[in-house]
Image (tube, rainbow, N blue to C red; front, side, top):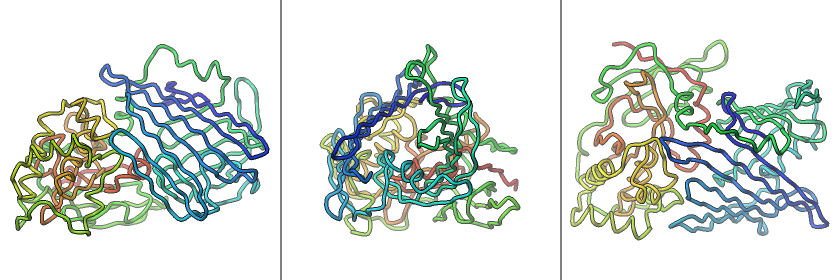
Amino acid sequence: MGIYFNNKKIGFTHTQSTSDSSGKTVTSKTFLRMSSEGFDQSTTFTQTTHLDTKGKLIDFSLLQELMGSRQRIQGQVKGDRFVYRVQGEGFDRERSLLFDPEFFVSANYIEKIVHDGLVVGRKGELSMMTESFQILNPLKYVVQRKEQLEIQGELREAFVIDQKLSGAESSTWIEPDGKILKETTQNGFVSLWEPEEKATDLGNEIFSVGSFITFSLIKTQHPIKNPRELKSQSFQFFQLSGPDLIPEDHRQKIVRSQQAEDGTYSTIVQVDSESGNPAKKIRLPISNPTFSNYLEDTAQVQSRHAMIRALGRELVKKNEDAWQAAKDINLWVNSNLEKTLVDSTTALDALRNRRGECQSHTYLFAAIARSVGIPTKIVNGLLYSEKDEGFLYHAWPEVYAGEWRALDPTLGQNHVDASHIKLLEEEQTAPLRLMEFIGKIKIEVIEK
C-alpha cells in the first residue's frame, strides 16, 4: 500500500502471509521517507508475527529504525502471561503481564472483525495490543456502510469500518474477504492499495517533517504578545471529546466545561507560569518509592547508562540540593544541544548528536536528572509560538524537588511561562493519546 500525507506520497507498507500446519506467519514492512533541515529522518518498521491455527498470537518481533537508532520489541505468549522484551542502545529489559486470550495485534485484528461479520450497522469492541508501546487498549469499531471504491481504475465493493483506539481514529475500506483497500486517519494520512511497483515508487521529492508541524499548528484569533513573559492566562478549548480531557495540576485549573450541540466539549482553562523556588530544599538522591516511576530507566530515557550517569555526576558534583541540581542540568542541556527540527528517539541519541528539538532536550534532561535521583516527568502539551501565531505541540520535563516544578530545557526556562499547557504526562502512551487532540481541537485566547 502507498502511504500519503496531504496528497503527498511519503512511504509504503508491504504485508505478506504464509500458512503451514502450525499456523500462519505474517511479515510486514513500513517505510516512511522524510527529511528535516538536510538530515534524513526516514523511519522503517519491520515486523514478523506468528499465529496458531486458530489465528491466535504465538509471538512477534518488531524492529524500529530511525536515523541509525534501532529498537527491537519481542513479545511471546507463555502460559497465562504475555512476556515482552525491549532492546535498544543502552537498554535491555524483559517484562510480562497477565495474558488476555482474547487480545489481538496488528496481524490478526482485521480477521477477527471479518470473522464476526461484516454487517452494516454492527458495532464491536476488542482488546488490542499496540506493539510499539506494549500496551493493551480497547479498540471500538462500527461497520458504517458498504460502497463502491475505485482502486487503480477498477470499481471494487468494500465495507467502511470506523475505528477508535485510545485517541486515534481511522476508517478502513475492507473487501468481503478481508483485503484492505484503503485506510484514512483523522490527521491527514491515507494508505491506498497499489501494485508493488507503484507503492514503492516514492519519486524524487522527499517529504519535509516541517509539513507535520504546519498541519498540527493551532492558530488563535487573538495573538499573545511576549509569550515567554506570560504570567497568567485563560484559554478556551473547543472540539474536545470529553469534559475532563485537559488535566489539572499546580499550574492549571479547569474553570468551566460544557457540552456543545455536536456532542463535543468546550473547556476554559486557567494557566499560570511556574512559581518560584520550592518552599523547602530537599537533598539528593530522592529515593521515596512514591516516585519510583519517575526515576525509571526506559528505552527512551536511559538514565542508567554509563555515559548518562557520568554526565550527571559531573554536572551535580557535590551539590545535594535537588532544585539547584535540576537548574544546573537544565542550563547544560539548553546550552549544549543545537536547536533543530531533527529530533532524536532517545536520550543517548540526543547526547551523541548534540542537536534536536523539544523531545531531544526533554529526553536528555530526564535521563540526566533521573540518574542523580531527581524524579522527573515527561510532559506533552502545547506551547504558544509568537512566530507562528498559534500553538505547537511541545514537550518539557517536570521535576520533584520538594514540590513539582516545570522547566523547559529547549527554551532555557527554569520556570515555564503560562503558554505551556499540559495535555499528558504519560511517557509511554503519549504518541497514541495525543491523537485525541492533533487535528481536532481549536483554542482561543480569552482577552483580559
